[in-house]
Image (cartoon, rainbow, N blue to C red; front, side, top):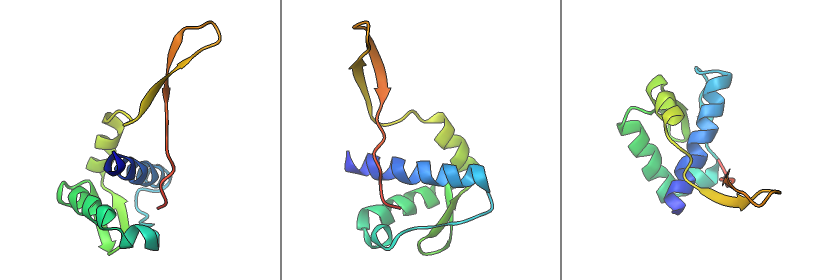
Length: 98
């Protein structure tokens, strides 16, 4: 579960950066760089061709990675009650330090 949250947080941040300027790299925070889980996720994304790494901790999405991000559903969804007592799906996003 934590892995999914870290992965989605990273991918959302990378996708936002890609939409603003696909040629710019994103510098990860020291906390993320020092995390074994984050390094593993970045390594997997790099090996799958979804990100490229300029130097350790400086990455950007590839076009392939951006397309994959657009096709994946959010990890966490929750059902909430609407005013007329109908159940409404609600997406939950959690902030991950990047």
